[in-house]
Image (cartoon, rainbow, N blue to C red; front, side):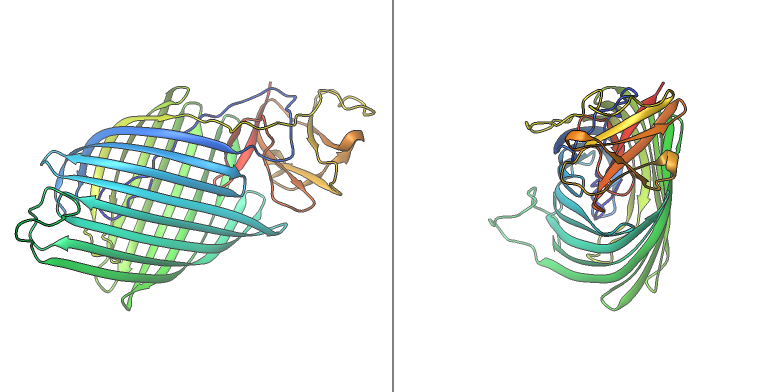
Length: 396
């Protein structure tokens, strides 16, 4: 969950995990995917002026992942406060990942937001964070830089019912503020899988400067999922010459049926030194509706048996990928602690690996000629916790 600019803007995501049998079908790359979502929640929140009130929020959104290495997210949000105030917001985000070496990747994330309120206030911000990431087994570490710009425009005396006054009558004096941020970020984490449960935990630290004022943000994060339930939480502290602040949030989700989840969340966020918006808090409960649609395209699947190759030994699972031009193909999963295993080449451009797995639930991915790790088309996938997707496999 992400709170932006004190106007109760949150990125709500959801999805379903699809398990499949012990004879998966595998293709060359992950299929592009569209995921619409709609959240409707009620609770209490703090508005841009620091007033706490009961509120109702409706937030539609759309996530698009054209490949395993690229993701986009667009969302809007409308908040209606009990004291008759409101806020309208739009947020766009993107993330990319480029494999430089087998254990080193360049990642980039960018976010832009625009908010208008009934207090004759408008806020805008944009940020980007390129970083280098390395992973060894279940452990990952990253370091990068973050740059951001922000602006605020607010009437000295609130009086217009419109977020963007267009004139008419006597206009109040308008106060504007602009800010820039530059900083260094680093951190790390670990992910785990235990039969039907999975999750991750991590730490992130940012040392930045805004208008020559140094800030230090330290955040601990964790999430877990088991069956229909999900849990995420974070706790952080900010240190600066303007004063120290503590913040954090927690969210609990329960999948009621395919594409429908009940979510409850609460948290407190710090003031924005970038624009001067005050900090606040929120409590909410409501429904999150999600759906996914893959664009129409041909899906290459592996045959149930490979010509010229003996069946897998008893008690083994065969993972197959078609890559006729590849010189080397590897597969890795949580049962190998994500250490690569070299696949064997079969006729007709197929590669395969026979692995012995006890009954349980596993995640895995393929890599061709040292390229990015990819989840196969046709397989159920889950978020790997680091901006990508891993295939999920259930062995009975």
